[in-house]
Length: 96
Image (cartoon, rainbow, N blue to C red; front, side, top):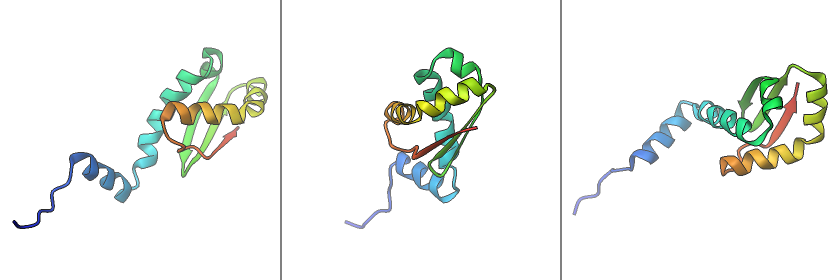
C-alpha cells in the first residue's frame, strides 16, 4: 500500500493558523467571551478593550477603581480565564 499525505481538517487548520500567525486572533475572540463569563457585568461594561498577544493579555478599563480591583484579583482572574478557556494560554495580565 502506498503512503498517503492525508491529514484531518483540524490538523490542517491548526497548521495554517500557526503558519500565518493567526492563533492570537482566534484566542482573542475566545478570551473576550471568557472575560464576559468570568467577571461581573459591572466590570465587563467598564472594560474598554482586551488585547491578547503572545500569552500576554492587556486589559483596558475606564475606571481607576475597577483597575485597582482587577490588579488585586489578577491571579484569580488569570486562573479563572485559563480554566474557562481549557488551556493555560494566558501567561500574564496587565491592567491599564
